[in-house]
Length: 328
Image (cartoon, rainbow, N blue to C red; front, side, top):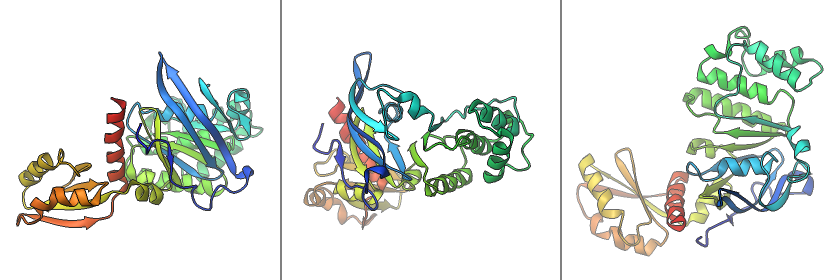
């Protein structure tokens, strides 16, 4: 891997503090399937009350990492603790304090909203499952839909119900595996408002996502590609550590932009070029080399160039390209 591999660029807002603030502390986790390392040598810490985002391409090891962190999968190598319990020997204790929400929303489609929550409350062994269900319905804005069948709900309402179900028992750790896939933007925003409210009350959240706007809502993020944890830290720290110099170039015609994309993507000094609407983002880690590469195009009258801050998406496109080369 490159020197950027497994790079920690910061300890997050306010630092880690005391050991009691650290909910997850793992070292050198490795997991293999059929002899292939799906996750390789991952070490990290997660603080109590933080929202920790996992990003990376499909098949990168995000879900496998999350499951090892909370004792749902046993690592082939590595050690660590989750909620103070050993991830190898005390997995049953960990699971009692974890809520897990998958993108498929594990609901009983032929039960109503109320029946789903009451049934799950009984599975958790809650003393007053009906009262817990009523409280969840009120808190998540489901009032008035209590008797509607789960299978008849839209994606956004199913999402709210699934969140209510997995937080019904008052877990200390919440796992969200691409929870907003296929959900409209308004429902996604309302969902994230609720996640931040839960985190403010001390709940720790691990979330995998492909959406850049959701990554920016996390307190800390980690980018994983082909089993390697490439970088982690706050969004600002990750962007700063990329050392990308970025230009946005626009043209009067889409044809010009398409041709420019083809011309720039293989030039020395250009590490990332990607279309964004009617413009291109052109980035490089060596500012002087980038300037030399784009200099012949700066004087063209049909192109408009402006210097820009690198976005989180710029950074991840760059990381993904480098990771693919390393994997090959």
